[in-house]
Image (cartoon, rainbow, N blue to C red):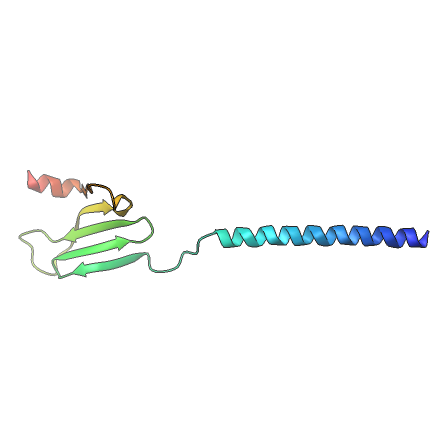
Length: 106
């Protein structure tokens, strides 16, 4: 009985070792697949006191801010529009303007 018990225990330990190895490899693959979120959320592309162009690096959008035409430098910057950078490479890009900005044009 002793050799039979020993052989059975080797088989059980071997199977356990194989299972642990397989599950460890699967967990490592899942960790590698998740993209690392590093870097800044926003990047300031340009500013001159009257205008501000910002890129949202998380959702690939460019935002354009400007002061009102009669305002002085240092007054509040207001969102004028945005462009989705996922459309880069297409024949044309369509900017999205804000309602407040469109109202001043008309």
